[in-house]
Image (cartoon, rainbow, N blue to C red):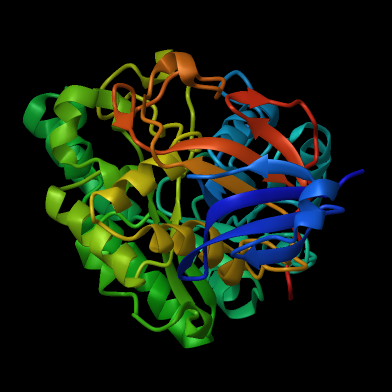
Length: 447
């Protein structure tokens, strides 16, 4: 099999943008050329001409809900990984609130088997904490498990962890990343009761951020940080949505942090004024809040105070999104358009394209200690994305590859288009077409 040469691209990697080429052999990056490539190599390799395009490491999305098993009427591993590859997302970490929930090693092994059979992108699955499964979690092989998800707020079934003794045990004993959904159930419940009494129980979606408030987020996140600081836990605060929560994070380099934060594309793009047009399409937990919160999140991402940008990709069929602040399902799809949207924010001056790559590719690899991914480095797996920065397109539901068939970004015209995705050295998406080749591997983690 001939080597693959991605030729004459603007390589965006590790804070630099430089014209060059990348040689791929046997699934790995064999050489990174800056400037000219030997003419003899051009004759021996399969050449993918990339003139005018940008070459990035594959995106690692540390926060998705792909719904398999048990909720496959909304999404499944195959449909959502097709959408991921079309968006330049080559690796994902999937959350445990499926059916059955991934709260036992047996359920996790079953999900890994589904990943091997059905996922078209590199895969990893979280274990989920409950009030009574700490001993089970401690048996996990964290070279294969990306982390433990803790719901310190509303969730489905038995996954709300509100037992103080259990929380202390989780933060004290787990060696892995503890990824937390932080919202105070008590504050949310009180807000809900108050607004139901005021309105007679009819609450338009604009009430959603009035129920799931900044105070609810901060109170829970601050408690998580308090526990993590006490026990030196590797705490990762998921989907931050408020300016106040940012104060819990430091500006230290990621490699020196034990407490890190994630922002989702939806919270960086939308604010509460968008409920009028988008309605329940942008209803998610935690809620999209004020423009001041959105702008503070953007600034924190640019500064590196927030370390990771992910999606919280959480599709529902549209009938489940119908309703109001209390009845419509929370969550939205996002993996197919997350990278183009973030590169558009860079074009607007919110951050730089190098920072987009740092937050979406490098940081998840560093934070989770992913083995040999997230960077364009010799000897690393060849997970690569070619982006055309001058190929505008309008997001339309007809383009959506996720099984749900809709996007909250419908109607937006973005300037950056994913042209080609390479996974483990194999061209898996090119010019709007999934090749059908399954080159996916399970992610491995340094412990």
